[in-house]
Image (cartoon, one colour):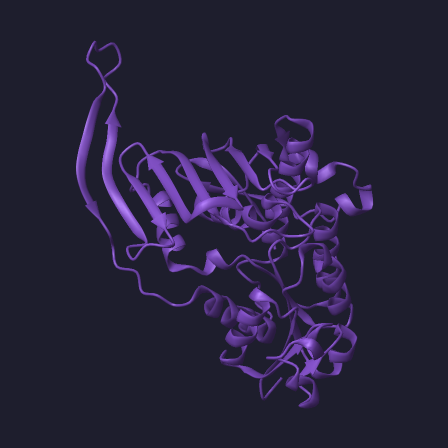
Length: 366
């Protein structure tokens, strides 16, 4: 790879087309090819086949790439990822890493065995505004965190193979885990399908972070008139709002409810201060993610959003599906061991205790 890494983008639909654009401008990338079974019938991309920069299958593209970006429907992620890894290629898989915990574990094990980079496209973890929200929470500028509330709503786009939880919630689960510094202990989900008879198009998730005494509530919908991409963090001292559709993406509200002293007959007091919006230097998160993937593939460094990071999100989404089906709270530990043979369960990354503010947080080893 002395002259640069060669990248193939599998799946050149809405998101794959963005990956093609970004990878073509990423330092350290010598060439980019498109891989899609439909490519000969796509007016804007058909010419790539004749130019040797477009292929109809992963197998046909193998001699021309060192790494793949997989931007196909979620149900195909594990199958394509395993093919690429077994061929010795580095892999960036768009969210979610897989549709089951078992498949996510297989991808992690295969990448480890092959000695290649496995990374998941949790793009918001490469977003400067999300990092600022994380810093606000973890520095305790907001005080003790009470809860996160997330809304990801729009009119469509309906998917043909997964419900709205699988389509949209991975973004917010990865943000919540990133901001809070750990995975949740349990998940409760409820939802409904209005337009599609099979897949839920509106859903709510509650993620409980028992070690922190906090929770995150996530609302996702394909059936809403207003595009909303907003997360609110409420603390004992201040509150912060991250709005990905606003010019001021982070707004810190100096607002709080002040509790009276123990035994005091005084009522609760309300503190109302200023609203501030710190400047955030913009760098397209998808481009930041692409540069990081290339760097990890070349140097062998562990990605920020590695296989274990992707696994943590898949576990939550799988727990949410079980909660929807059985109408109950689901512990994350259930998902780790449910229906998994001992040989596969042994591949689960070992929890590593870490300290923040005197509390033990559960993170995952690489």
